[in-house]
Amino acid sequence: MVNGTMQTVRSCPSNGEGQDGSVFGTTVKSCAGCGGRIMERYLLHAMERYWHTGCLKCSCCQTKLEHLGSCFTRAGMILCKNDYIRLFGSGGSCSACGQNIPASELVMKVQGNVYHLKCFTCVTCHAQLATGDRYSIVNGSLVCEQDYPKIMKGHTPSPSRSSHKVMSILSNMVA
Image (cartoon, rainbow, N blue to C red):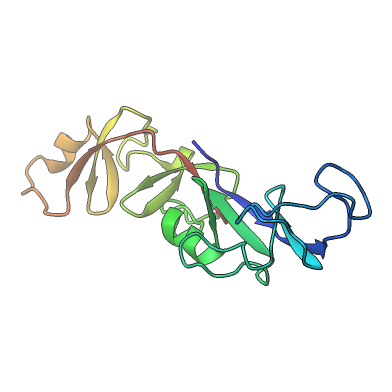
């Protein structure tokens, strides 16, 4: 699993400290995006690598990240904040408790909803659901396999019910 992380994008003069620690421009830096030599006056430093100002782009929308001041990385992609949230989360708040989810915290994701690990629980017995556990979603709520028959007893099956098995879908989120 690759963790999602926020990176700071720094603009710095290309004649400063080199990647190998040399000073005063004795080492020419290579761009992590295109592989070319960085000969321009300014370059970007993000994810412990150097970039031409035009080469650091969002992997999805191709927006240049030089003026945004930050970027997000996950699954080998470099993303702007909007695409990171669109792909990996719904604004960084837990669907169960509504509280913020820090960028470094592991989460569970189900049908576009994001949960703290501790909040990924059965709505009836409050047992925490773990990898391998079977559960259903009834009217938008998580129900464990043991409680599902109790809830459905005497009721007509709802079209909004679906059965699932908890897979290894842990991921990191951005607040």
